Length: 98
Image 1 (cartoon, rainbow, N blue to C red):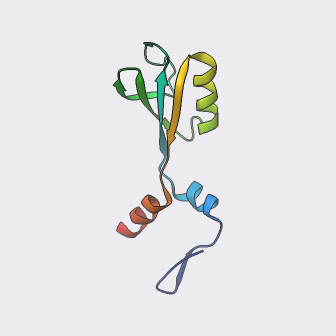
Image 2: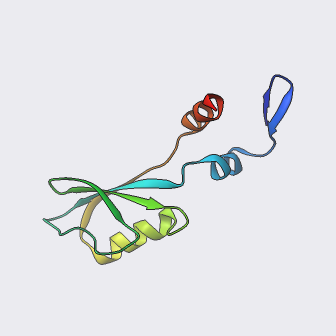
């Protein structure tokens, strides 16, 4: 539940709050086992390459995090995969800036 100055802003659990107010995309950081060309899939928008580590921006509406991880893991040899999503604290800061 989120209340501001006596006004109910949100009534639900943390997961629902996150899904409702999160950013429209997340970042997928992939560390490949060997030099790899960028992923040739429209859903994965290349944000950065640093050696074997590639960062991709992916819209939630195009592919959820589980599907993105599964796609990478089955089509490429990787040593690490990390997902970066909006944290609850970041969402609240954005709400109060508006």
